[in-house]
Image 1 (cartoon, rainbow, N blue to C red):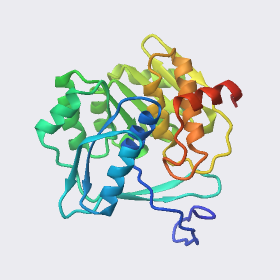
Image 2: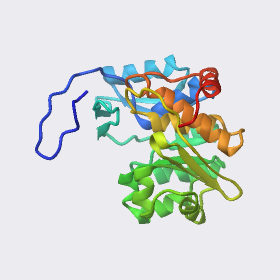
Image 3: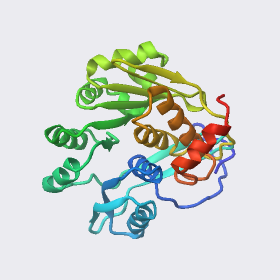
Length: 285
């Protein structure tokens, strides 16, 4: 934790909190499993203590680890997260290697899934997996951050091979150059996705598809750490797929809000019953 996020050429004195397992897709997997969804993780970890911690944490949350491989003589990828008093974090990602999944493993994992959730950070890696998903008839969901949105030509290709695309506010603005609204989100449907979702932090979220649209407000909680809140939102949005769109967004908002009341990306991942209780007793902002 830090008293404030450092500026250019500025130093701040921080307080070490902990080493915790994380990563957007991994957080999604654990949050979805906690909500009662059957989840398997396709991943490659280093042959170090961090890799073993990640594997054990997946198992703690009931995530199927049969598709996880160990990379010999390699360090597991990691991030450094700075959390100021507001809880709105800054993250430095340190990828130590690019996973090299055998095609037969990829095909087996993807063909067994009803939905494939990917963070498209390595473009070649993403398009390889998305191509296999298309052959298997498996829908793909991605989360687009500003670093991905900055390469619009690549992003346009991505939108053509995914079913659901999720943005945070900054990612959407980097993509479209527009404030996220129902109408501006709808412009992205012409590129191929069936649904566009935009999270707006404490202000709520919106989503559009060809036949539906909804925008909902957020929920007030005493946030400690927003790390992983977007991942948790996406997991809950997926878990609530059978609800009407506005209720689906409310469920996802509530789940993400509850997740921010603990430290770390999995500090307080709620169950579906806990989310329903929260919804029954909490007014929208």
